[in-house]
Length: 265
Ligand code: LIP
Image 1 (tube, helix red, strand yellow):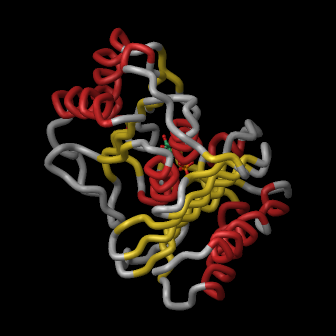
Image 2: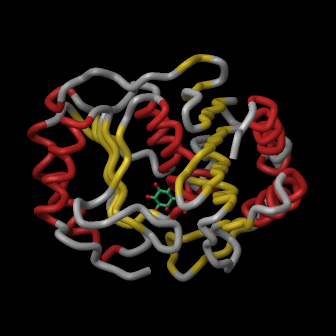
């Protein structure tokens, strides 16, 4: 699909049209565990995105965090209406609306927007990555000077010990680590040269698909374990880095601790 600047601008405008919803009062419910939350804002943003993106590209299916739908790799919107829901509920202003377009299994367009800070990250495959109107490029920091974004699997804490072991092995070799709680923003910060490494053991397609386009178009690397592939029908082990050399060091360390995906869904 040939994605024009006009089409990308239309997607950005649709995302921004959801902003008033995120500034309204909301109610909170739990999804399975005490940490996994959904708000009325998540649902309202997703309903607006589904309607407007459906009008823009009727032939694409819609896969959203708050809907039960089948992934269809031909042409699909992959949407997290509010990535970083826990941050949103707590008023941290570090959440984002994340919209990806996937064509034949490959992420080709990504928009990640934090309405609280007006940070708009966007990219179309082959056309570069942007933070508002500023062209993005990853940093050239080596591993020992790298900042490492990671998490401890808050929705499935049985996986936390493996995540902590990865951090125990990486931390002495890098500069420092951070945990924001919004995967799409953390990955876009890597694309912007603010960090260099990223690992989450169980991340869903709506958390990472849009930001993956931004990272790649900024010159970074996004992937998973050596013997696995990124997919949109289940969670994955998500790895990212500012260059191939750092990616390989990160991937080898993670693969030593987590040789295979320790879950199906
Ligand atoms: C969240 C991610 C975060 C991850 C959480 C959760 P949500 O997305 O952005 O990085 O660690 O487990 O998946 O659920 O707030 O949209």
